[in-house]
Amino acid sequence: MLEIGRRKFLLHGSAVLSTSLLLKACSNPTSMQTDSNSPNPIAGSSEGFKVAIALPGVISDKAWNQAGYEGINIAKEKLGAETAYVEQVAQPDQAEALSDFARRGFNVVFAHGGQFDAAVEQAAAQFPKTFFVAVNGSVNAENIAALRIDHLQASYLCGIIAASMTKSNRLAYLAGQSFEATLQELRGFELGAKSVKPNVQISSSFTGDWNDIAKAKEAALAIISSGTDVIYQWLDNSSPAVLQAASDKGIYAFGNTTDQLNIAPKAVLTSALKRIDLAIAFLAEQAKNGQIKGQTYDLGLARPDILNLGKFGQMVPEALQKKVLSTKQAIIDRKITFESCQEGGKETRCMKTAST
Image (cartoon, rainbow, N blue to C red):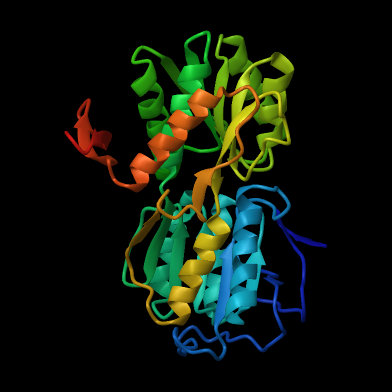
């Protein structure tokens, strides 16, 4: 492993060295384009189709970053794409990481997290012939698509479970950073919980880091000491620390992104399964077929292969499981929807039923 600045890069295939980054090439070695003014291979062509991803964390986190990495691997296997990735991209390095892929002629570059939005806009403006996908992002342009899983739908279901299981009437949401996707997830958790107990108390905290285990454990213990007995967390490499802290203190928690029941079976009620790998592969295929557009792609429970719930913990009563699964089907059937509304002078989303 080579270390350049704060980022570590592994090589797969031939060595490819740019002016500023050593990229992880996950495909057959080919010569890379370095002239940003020459056209990239056209989306829709089966020859020379190249997909890359920039990740904020490590591919071994068994959560968000690993899912992103696996997404381009699916594209490699299914589409025959040449793929590359770079991990542990710090915020100051985001624009350069994305630009470097564009210089090398990658057709589609995924920026894996809403924290990349500003960098995506910067790189896309400089490289109009490269298509950028802001995963969990909120930006669009002619050559930018936002790929979002509708986190609110799954967190709404988890909110129902949390409010039904709490004894202290105190719930908490814990994530790495505050941006559109995490705020939507928090909103869904609140809506679901308050649909069961309108007076339930819900706090929210952001550690500022998705992978710092010490910070995550410290935050979890602080939340637990406040009397909270259910935590909905969205973290990456540090996620197990929160789940284990919950288990050690005898409270409940939710897994996120992958099914994390096995990490802390006495604590995990269920997990919000987000197959972002399949979503990434789906958009890569759209790009290869020349069908990708500069718009927001929202994928929710109607795509159970992409968004779903994991296994229920043994502590979740069967009647509650049935209620949650019935509610999930109502969302899929659009008997329950989440529409834009104003609340407290701010734009948000509110739950509506087919009869309202």
